[in-house]
Image (cartoon, rainbow, N blue to C red; front, side):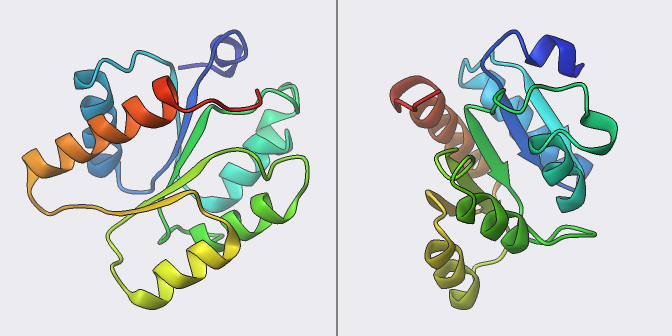
Length: 150
């Protein structure tokens, strides 16, 4: 999927370093009838470059924000918590809905994520069917029902 296509529609940004988890999330969103384009990024540094139109993403428009960011916490280069902290502390990006989608059920990660401004925190279920249902509901709420300023 190319950035050029993303700039013409409402899209979801999935920041996930595990290809299998990313594929499962995409399939679950599609199964839940979410047809929006999905941009997958594999680390926190790339996510910030994408949002702020730096590096490989200088051709993007800074105001072309995703409808939703699905963010893993355990990412290479820059952690998901640091990405969350950066985006939620910046007035220009703080209104982007961010849902942490992670395998970490540690209370410290949950508490820190909410302190930093996460909109929702979901622990990846181990059970495949439960994972699918969680992502389907998540996509429907944040992409279809929820109203955002952009």
